[in-house]
Image (spheres, helix red, strand yellow):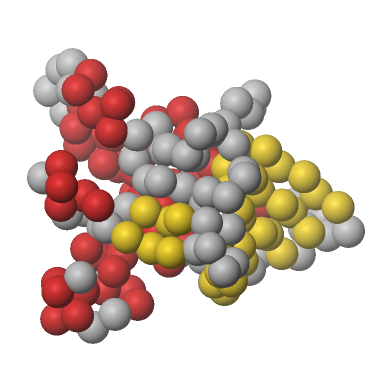
Length: 158
């Protein structure tokens, strides 16, 4: 697969997966398809023992590409297919046969936070933070991911 938004480098049994969609590594359908393909591939590679997931610059991922949403539904079932692609992207990280380290090098917002949560090990830089801005656009899909790390009542307060 030709990768446009994800970079993969394998050196000394370490796969470095870099989200590279400037300026904020927003996740659109192409991004998610590529990331799923990369982690599925890593699972089958004998030259990889661990994977590191990070973002370019000082940004892990600002989450879903909100600009993609208006054109998302063109025919019946499109919204459900979009949600399935999104879930499979997250599951490709957690189901990877190799340990995945999220090297959170800046903001991890919304779906970016979800990617972080699905990794096996979380390492955050001094400028890293998490947030769930979906509520401002009428979404709350990230609540399930919040509950992976926090009790339900605390996640709801957040």
